[in-house]
Image (cartoon, rainbow, N blue to C red):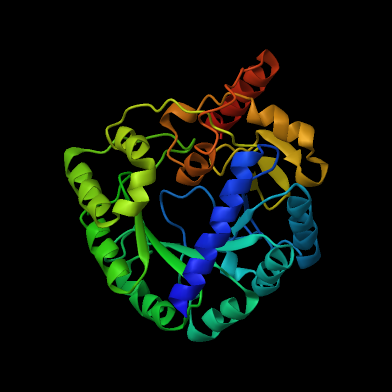
Length: 335
């Protein structure tokens, strides 16, 4: 059952990729935030709070309808912790109703048998859980020890694909934990990836020698994943810049809880246009806009989407766009 579901998902992804190669005039992936609140407070994270209210369901439906109108292929729900939204299952069901692939990024703490069954019923197709360490510490509580029972629940009950992402760098005290986490994920039948923790603007923090050894070991466990982005990830691990054409704001959209379109989670404020007002002209402009943060960017979902078009349509870096991007960087640095 799970393998059949996974193969169907891959087939559908393949059809969407073919469509993306034929036309650049629609988003491939959108991340949308139904609530900023989270049940955790990881020290390196700048994407949560403890007070904000969930976005009302009808507002979320209108935003998803707009993404469908723009031709979006995949919608991933993120946060905060999206499982805290009281209508999360209805949100997922609406994504599927609008014929888009439905994904979810979660810290995993809410993955009880009852909730997993509801996610199955809603039609979730892809789940990513980030686990930072084996034992919880003051940097992160997203630990394998605390989450392993939840992972077992998923292995037994989930009809959707599950990927476990671990991280190195940025204050993680025991980088070897990433290798333990990756092996456990594969043992349970999941896929596994590893990321490099970025700074507050989404840019690279180079790995030290110890972290690099772990990174290379995890990469060996996931040859298929890294075959696609091998050169890109190798440069990041070595602290080197990448030359690529970031298509954020066009092929990739990040929609915050206020309904504004941003380049990504780390570049909030640019372009900062309400999704309901976002047009084909906005997609076209941002497709051609050079992004200042691209060379040292570690936001892997943006990389994957942008590489579809890396071979075509050089970015011209219009003066007005350069000025606007610089202003956005200043706003990020000012906090």
